[in-house]
Image 1 (cartoon, rainbow, N blue to C red):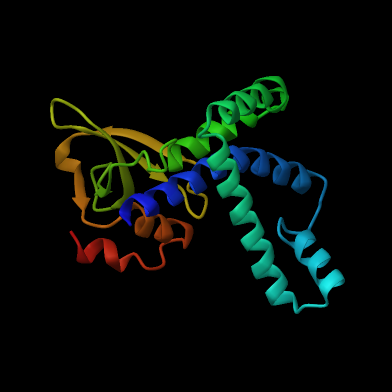
Image 2: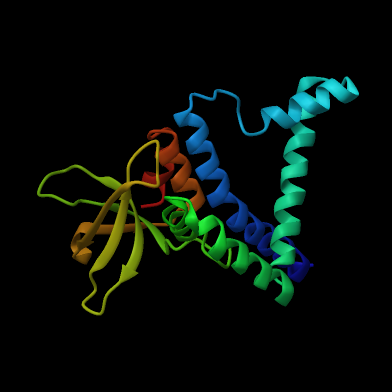
Amino acid sequence: MQKIKHFVITSFLGGLLVILPAAILFLAFRWVFRTTTGFVSPIAEILTATNHVQETLADILALGILFVVCFMLGLSIRTRVGAIVHNLIEVNFLSAFPGYQLVKDTVSQFIGSSGKSQFSRVALVRAFDNEVLSTAFITATHADGSYTVFIPTAPNPTSGLIMHLPASRVTPVEVSVENAMKTVIGCGAGSQVLFKKK
């Protein structure tokens, strides 16, 4: 059962890693041209118009379709032929778009090519000589006991600061990366969990 669960998750995340950089780039261009419709809205509108279903149900169906597409893409790139086709499309087409590689690298850092986050642990850090604490993610541990941490900005966790700090300024906390990320996206809402697990 665990193997099936791992297979489904890694296949879905593999497809997400293929489609998400292109989707982010597409959404960025839509924003530039002042497009206000969401990514799922066009699909929902088509479903509503053709099947006369309620809008909420249409959104659920659209999200289900996106999940299946991501899963199938992830499954296909696990095969030799799928991987070759994906590499050809990426090298000859997608890489020509400005910013595609940057977006792909950013997404890869957050979910990793194996579906795992590149952040090893969550920590509260005191970067300066005061009492201010920052939520951070440990990205590397060094031989001398010091840490490299990423301190994200809120509510956009893809930007932030990279700091190299001695162990005395870093307090790891027993909170999952996912839960800590929710507090960043929520501009600090729910941060009590970080202090309960110190």
